[in-house]
Image (tube, rainbow, N blue to C red; front, side):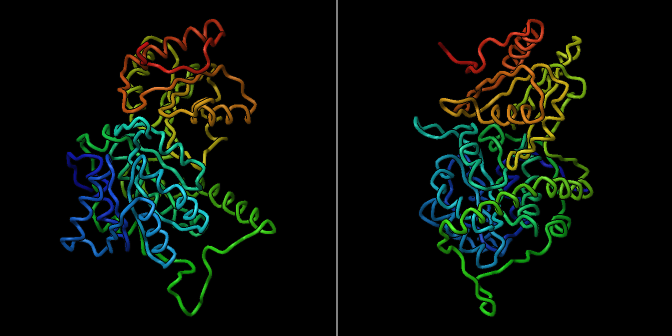
Length: 392
């Protein structure tokens, strides 16, 4: 049985990193993830962990240090946000292309310009094609639980790819909530000993990292990378089942909430899903069959499983806390692809919300669900994509 504490999301992740005790951690803090590395640096300074903390001059260098340490054979972690992730961009592809199981916390924050330090998903969604596994978290408890599972998934023999665990900046990173910590020895047993594969420091079996690969073999490398990340769906479920045994908390590829008989479905990521669940309950009390799907594993995206979960919905509204300018929101495109590939043809609309940390209130969810009931009655969608809560 773990202990319950009132704690911020950032504190929860710092404590999780302490329990993992990685071999190497690179640090170039950026708001709102700063507190994670600040607190973890204190653990290093106080000798609570024996991690080699590498302080660098930029996020690009932080990920470079992670790549070098991981290739050398260490268990490696870091944390970042927003422009910090953007500055890592080049190295994110190197980490995944070299199949290095680095674990990173991404405290989601808006990208500039204009400068904004608050939470939206433009950083994580922008990195969706960098070859990293992505897990999203509704609250501090889920972020804490997800980081242990991310380490296991990333280091799995069939995967060997980097993974990031995402949570909303300030809404979760700086808000205090009650959550349960698992005992150190339980985490230690669950994580297990890191077993490096082809480490650079094994001089008896020298290997090459970062070679030039021309057209005769490059596409074979990329296909192998694609096949490896697709295996993460199965491994994610296996690891979740193991985690449930030590925590009592159950996780899947996504969370279906009152979806079984839902004619109207809303899709919401991270903290906003918690807000919308109460609104879903209120509409259910009125006899309206509405449900919610909260994605957890975004890369690889579980297309078949999502389509099956949304299979009864006649109207689907996908909320995006990020935009793909000139296109639909990134989550909408994934859900639309899932439904089309399954042969389903529900009416679908896309709502962009909460950019730059704009609050997502129950009234926002209520207004949209009312609009969905009208679409269900009339069979007409009207505007397919729009920003909500915008001053005109």
